Image (tube, rainbow over all chains, first blue to last red):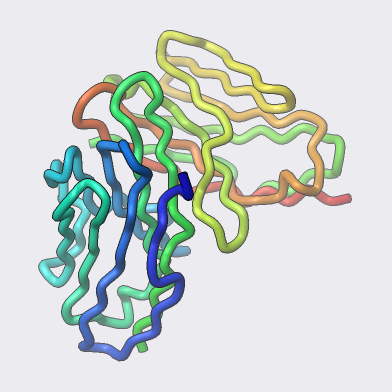
Length: 114
Length: 113
């Protein structure tokens, strides 16, 4: 397996624009996580899914953020409208339920909102 | 909810010396404690983990210890090498159905050759 795949790797957008980040988890994994990483706040869990169902979205900062998982192999994180303070690296991770609970991270998407 | 604190935020050691990173957690229900290493431009990668029914675990130059009573756990790297330079994150989660992992703030480790 190629691991968790995120796209794009870098995104630069203007304030007010809609941004969509994409993630393909490892095949067979039943948990998917979206994290945001900044210097100030470190790694923050935004939302996670189990079997495509959102379980906990308490980390989503505002209504401008939304996430979907229409099927087991794809998830999106959308920011609309984007603001400069949303600039960060966004990571997607996936894992299996059970004995091996290691979370495998993607390479991340570096978002810059100008 | 769970809160994980990690110290120090920066650690500089000479090649060959040992490095120790310490973390504390707040939720006594947490039972799974992974450690991740993040290199520049990459996502975090698991290097070792420990479960609450184990007090210590070792993998070559890396070891983790867990004190459930005190709710703290530590990462020990012996015989450090320049390639160990990275950011290290501790984390805590509740394994088994509906879990989420909460990360510490990270420790930037510099190993000087």
